Length: 186
Ligand SMILES: [Ca+2]
Ligand SMILES: [Ca+2]
Image (cartoon, rainbow, N blue to C red; front, side, top):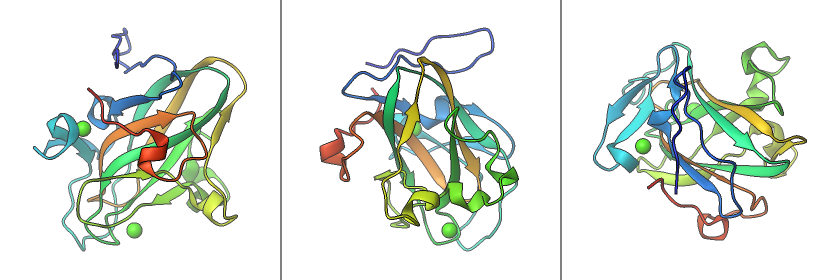
């Protein structure tokens, strides 16, 4: 069960991931810049997040969607439900503080934080595998040393890239969604 706690800063908060993981709607994150929520009856909760953009239209106008996630010490893998129409609408940059920097665009190689997801044209779950790890042929895992609130951001990189939902799990070895126990938010 997902519990959304209201706070004075209007941030979305979720409980620390139990062993079976937690699922969140992308549209409940805090939206910045050009990213907006939009309707789609095929999306979880009927809504998703994107910068509106037709297939074949390049570029993006900045911003991110942010989630505040309390964690226990340990390592986590991240899955998203996404929809990419073509190679110009199928990526985000992803950071999860404190493990990653605040702004991937200011790092020596911001492309290390890019997740190029599949462009099936349909909604699908996919594990987030960042370039920095794919280049080393390893699975992307975020490790937190202390319990506390973390900040997960999906930076707008290509307009038309659609983000529906997130699933956070401690099953860091799983490479398919059944193994990972991926489920949509309720
Ligand atoms: Ca792309
Ligand atoms: Ca959704």
